Image 1 (tube, rainbow, N blue to C red):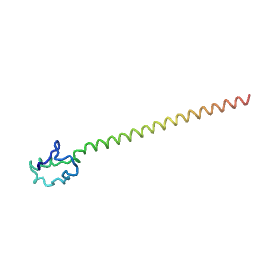
Image 2 (image 1 turned 45 degrees about the vertical axis):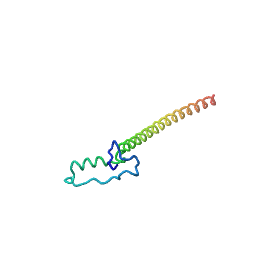
Image 3 (image 1 turned 45 degrees about the horizontal axis):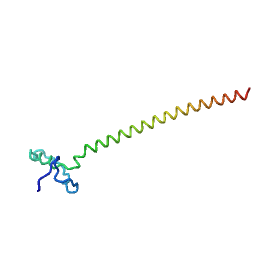
Image 4 (image 1 turned 135 degrees about the vertical axis):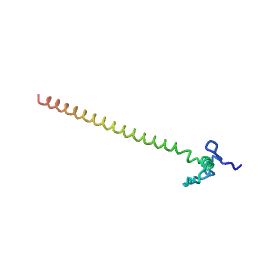
Length: 102
């Protein structure tokens, strides 16, 4: 059976046996409705997976953004804690100085 596969029913699920992608015809006068039908039927698995690849890229970008925001929040919290610790240290020094002076 040499029937050309479609997007919904590919001729084969093995990527090695699928027809490789070919460049589209740039001459619009050479195209007709049968050519359009043929080009739709000759889409490969790679073309079908383009939206998934885009979604993966967007998710990766969002994950990087979220991670950088988490890092920024952790840094801000660490700086707040450092300032708080420095103030506590100063209070302790003052208290010690007052205790020694009396």
